[in-house]
Image 1 (cartoon, rainbow, N blue to C red):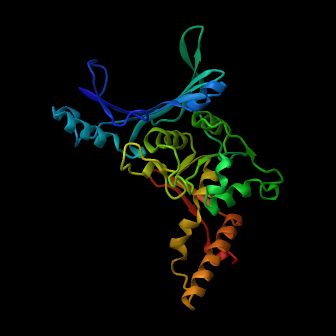
Image 2: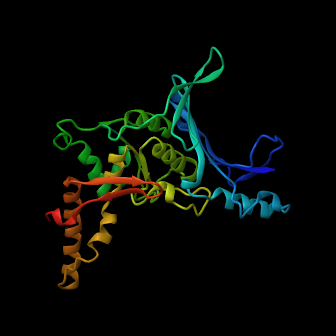
Image 3: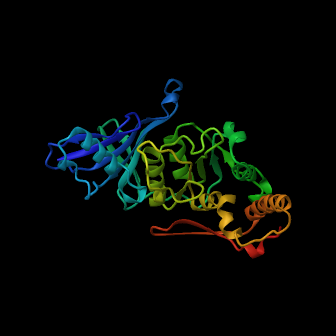
Length: 317
């Protein structure tokens, strides 16, 4: 029996012989040390993992040829996050906490050094539907697209949030920032930018497992354009933008100007070519601002991901 290990630190997935009769031929994807640049500063780091069932159409035991085996490893590993059988992370901080889900909710276990065991300390964790904390690396803000900059700036405006703006918290370790977001609510984001169009986080090792945990806890994960768990990987080390956290914040962020194009496609601005282009650009800019101040609602059902809805007829341009 063979399983597969795929790590952020390895170029290719590795087939593993499993001698233990009680083990399964699972595919495990993991980031062994997230936030490693923080180690010398004594700041929180962690490990992230996701577990998949093997692809029945690509059995690992059917190939003796090494190259064919590597190909089958890649095929088995490149599965969408919605197919995860389980996911979790281990946070190494003031305490060592293991957070785990196998599809029936999220549970946290804290290491008790006195007995050498992980003890259940966070039973059936539910992320708040909304929060008051945002976690982005604002040092990259000038490289983000305008809608993302507008969104972050809107969080700083007290009049939009009942007189108190959102608070900024950013550790620079996904595990640490996500753990806080899971417990307190809000949003963590690593957008794409002009230098890295798809951001820097890996889909298989970071974005999919964390989005899986967020959804299991009642939250959501988005690329800004679609549900993270619906993204079909086309490469083992594929990167995607990530916005993860409370439902309200993720739905609000996911409603980007790019998503408006389909709703505005029937709008015809006829004139000369140049005038039409300038008017369309102005229309989209005004619409994006108006939409971010309009009423909105979000809904999430099994397999459908995050859907943001808004009545275009109510928007004043």
